Image (tube, rainbow, N blue to C red; front, side):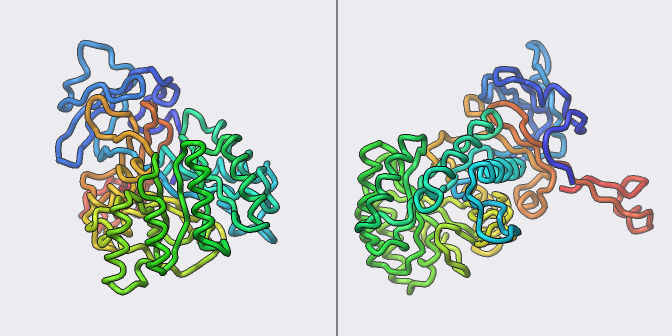
Length: 420
């Protein structure tokens, strides 16, 4: 399996990798989830036109062509809950290094891995204060700058304690983090001696700077969730909670009541079907009751959480795996499961909607296959489009030895076939 830009990749002309943001790009022969086969013309970072296959190639020069025959074209996923400062540390000996150079390298590599999976936008939670001070945040912001044009990386400043004497430094650090460039404030109130005071402090800083809030919580305490929902209600540009696995431990009537309160407050819940959340220092927590929350009217997005750190040493950070788990474990329809990692995830990040229609942002993912259910099951080969450019391609090939069974399946002479 290969990943990343390659001018010699089949079905993609060399110019697709070199085109700038304003160049015209024609995606040919893509299949949509409604069964249509279409050409899609991109320009200026947006979708300019969608027409039946072969209808957009004449007249106006289409620029670079990318053959998407055999691919399903989807709105690109977004990653609403990553941990860039601790990613890829599971195999390291000793304590996690927060040296800025190490953090920047890990954050960049992790973002590129997730981009290869299809996530063109990522929200990374970064710890501030304690031994790392603001160094880890500065390193992730540097990674963000180096990724410009490939993927969008936004940061959440996450202090450990915000109340009492010990919290004074954390509060000052949180304000400094926003001035430095963190675009979201958050943290884990469950770890503070005064969870309510922690939330109040975060909401105050968010109001001062007009920025969103993204809080970690897994409390199975309906009273605490009720207070949090009441405090968060009405805050703009909004409040996100995750992973909320503790909701699944509540009796059904209490869980339903909490879901209704979260819906009334306009809170978004980001669940982590793949498990692992470095901000909680807790393992074995189940996924939030997604169907219950959605039925109550809560916007539910899904994130990857830990990417090969101590919380989940085998975390993949793959949005399609998150959607697959929501469909296979939680019983969501494939379309609803994918919505959690695409449209709902983008909305949680305050981003505009993406549809494969003219006028929408050219943030797209092409996966080998013709149906969404199959893509969630076996989506190995992927082509990722960000701001109208092909920015990543993964191609997987399986080979079989010559045999009667392979011949009966209609495989090529050498028993070679591209994986979905």
